[in-house]
Length: 157
Image 1 (cartoon, helix red, strand yellow):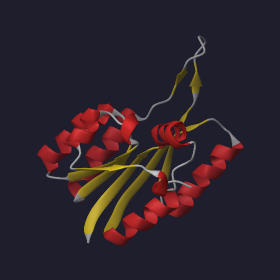
Image 2 (image 1 turned 90 degrees about the vertical axis):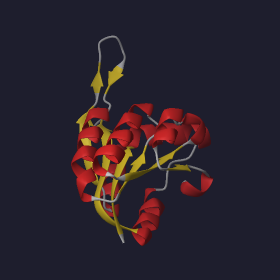
Image 3 (image 1 turned 30 degrees about the vertical axis):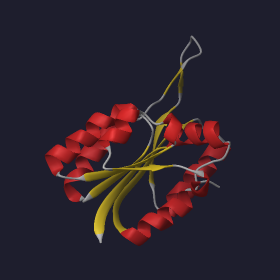
């Protein structure tokens, strides 16, 4: 079986599936599908820690499924805006994992990751699959991926 590393931009998947479908992504079903086709070497879910009981329950469920959950504190600025994206952390972990796997699976619609996928393809000869909500995923990310799987209702709870 091919070796794979999975990277989930939790905030991106949460908001895009909520906005498009009003339903959350089914991580357990996703894991079971990937597990049948690949040897999962690394699996990370990147989230924001708001010290919220429902989010902690969700993060615990992700750990139970098999993900290593990485948390960054939620920062509320004085002007009301919030800070807390994981782009750099995801990028570093992808670059660390790429030499050890055959494929990277990224769950995100963020176009900033397109250059990352180009880099691992060139430097490490690693293919990539992106899961994202079609209308809310950057075209550049779709084009950079070797395979794009649109998140549809069959992927949701």
